[in-house]
Length: 220
Image (cartoon, rainbow, N blue to C red; front, top):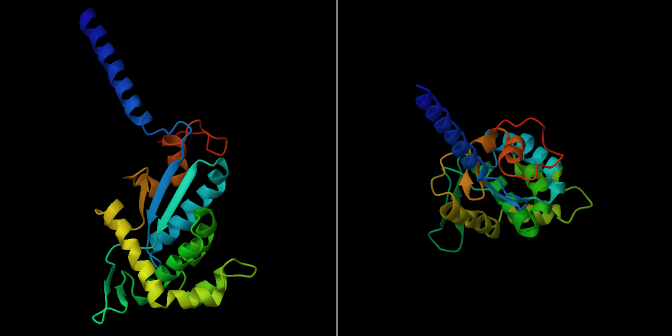
């Protein structure tokens, strides 16, 4: 009986070790965490995530130098094809034509400010606005590296539509199985937890040593 009990305890201990090891394999030990997000300009879930998860997380952890971010304004039920004449791009978006224009405006901003540390605040500001006029008025305030008139012109042009359509290539490369927006990849893998509690999830599973900017309690 004693031998059986000892064997059970030993087996349980090994099981705990395996579980802990499988969880710890995601920890990045000083390396940067690469986050790639796909979203839609008038999607309420994308808007909520960007404003209440992504942006607060960045303001807490951005100064650590441990985060890389990449945003693609292209979601589900969205298509872009060359026009019949071949001299333009025709796009249809999940939430209608106004969403396409917002996505195109975000794509123009990302082209103009390729460094995510510069474009993320502007792209987040544009997100969820009723239309591009309201977005431009709210998000391109002087002084700014972005000229309001130039960004508006880009968004409603063939160039803007082409920039937007180019983001579809990243869906094919990185997230071919995407069926939800926002779609969040961390180091190349989709985690639903990142949609629900990004700051806590990154701190618990990906950032080691744990910075002082992280919550003390470990949940994941």
